[in-house]
Length: 424
Image (cartoon, rainbow, N blue to C red):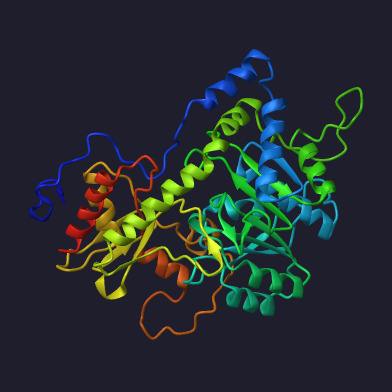
């Protein structure tokens, strides 16, 4: 459809500069610390910038130890390997630490949450989301333990910066003697019952990817209160070099350590993290107010127990207001119906006016790569003939709106108007 000429959208001008989903916001301090790394010639995987952000991140989140790594995925991988070796011992050469073992993992998340399970030869069992936070459903987790009582590792996540039901998940884990890896990649500064996300897992991770609340362009952190685990992560991330006068390796190693230059960018960003969070909160609230007369709801927040970081603003279209939409693994189409809309139409309309939105994360159990993995849902009511699980339903009806913290109220008003026109 040519949205720029279609009669419903007449009078709306295309944005001259693209409105991004969530792009980096650079303040200038980043250059200072990158230059510091260059001037002092500490440009590799050691240096003052790394030391500072490890200390400041641990202090902000409330953990004893923090290890700077090349990305959040590397942090998840090392967390999995550390806990797998504690649970099952050191694997034989040529085998992963999770060989033949199952791991419970969040279903509504980016694939980086689950991929490292397979790096170590494990099999993910995906746990459905619940509607109150869009995160791992404790009821589905209970059912998963009924089916697989021997599982000892859970990888949970905080979708779009909103904390999940951490107390309930922790209680279930403790009942079964299971460890938790907390993927807080998207939720830096978010709190659950007054405590920062990243402080709840036996091992937790955060991400400094380019689209996050603050960024290093890349990079991530592993956080724990166990000194031994922090030491392992630090050693393994630098190819597991032994303390010998030559290159000696008694363990499998990885090239996962953070660069001091990347750390310099993060160091320059850290003072602005609360400012960015407040900007994201204002964006979420403007969408909520501007779309309140439409048959949509914002991504949910459990305000009684948590305060998100509002990383991305999302909407969920009411079932009765969904026009006919069809998706396969690569393409999507829809049928226009007056008074209704769907994620595909809204995303195409936004793109036509030079604004970036995205579909909700496609659940892991729907991914072709994980097609043979088991999936556990607590949903039993299938009388509506809709998706038989919560995650599929959220994916079908949800979308992420332009949430860049540099968006102006005027620009956001235009986006809100475009969404209104989609329902005409």
